[in-house]
Length: 274
Ligand SMILES: C[C@](O)(CO)[C@H](O)COP(=O)(O)OP(=O)(O)OC[C@H]1O[C@@H](n2ccc(N)nc2=O)[C@H](O)[C@@H]1O
Ligand SMILES: Nc1ncnc2c1ncn2[C@@H]1O[C@H](COP(=O)(O)OP(=O)(O)OP(=O)(O)O)[C@@H](O)[C@H]1O
Image (cartoon, rainbow, N blue to C red; front, top):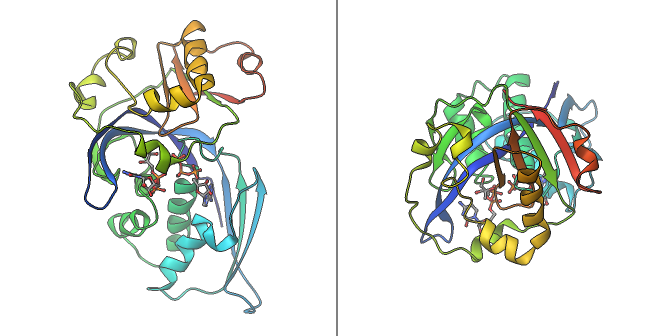
């Protein structure tokens, strides 16, 4: 069985308060985008090992047991009978990018195992398992635009469509540690709720929709700030860093010709938005 985990962007990201457990409560809008990995699971004939993991495409650090698709399998196996499996993962979503690539692979693995081995898990049960593996993971179970609070695992549906717009996504060769990015934040309540801002046309988001990570990340990596400026110079109606970075996206009303020539050797993709 094969599935295609997609990435997400954050439309606004406000870090509201630090929690006793060291995590932060935040307010953000998760928006799924058509940038995908590929994940295939087959039943392993031999029972010499519980799983094998084969990763192609963008190289990943860490041992197989650290991969979030393996963590998802091992977590479900604690409660459900499953045979040995072979896992093939093609990584296309850049890592350390603020795009939820690892989290998406994790959630799509849970959905794939549920279907393939008929575990009969509800959406809520799958969200519960996903939330135990990462703050961003639960969103990808339903994988619809949502207003998220808590650590990023409490969702309110929102009516938002960017259909007909074009997204330009640029990821420089800079790794931003999510943990470090949070350490530089002074939490605060936003003046205007993101739920109000997204009721307005995209053209007026620029002055009110903020990603609280930008100030500290841009100070440390001015090249990332320069990408956001370039996207506005190319005519973006709105541009922002996604998550804790390092990727930056611009929303355009028209597609940009030869956009990948504008950003040197950065990872650059243009997609029409749903
Ligand atoms: C910044 C976002 O990408 C916004 O979508 C997410 O909140 C990050 O989610 P994520 O990458 O899945 O984060 P995790 O891998 O769960 O956590 C990495 C580290 O980030 C910090 N972290 C993460 C999420 C959160 N709400 N508060 C935090 O303080 C914690 O130190 C945590 O150890
Ligand atoms: N399947 C996977 N794909 C990508 N990264 C993975 C995976 N499994 C574990 N990781 C680890 O998770 C870290 C974060 O990965 P990535 O940034 O793609 O995911 P994320 O944390 O969900 O996204 P974000 O960048 O929004 O925080 C990577 O540096 C990598 O070491």
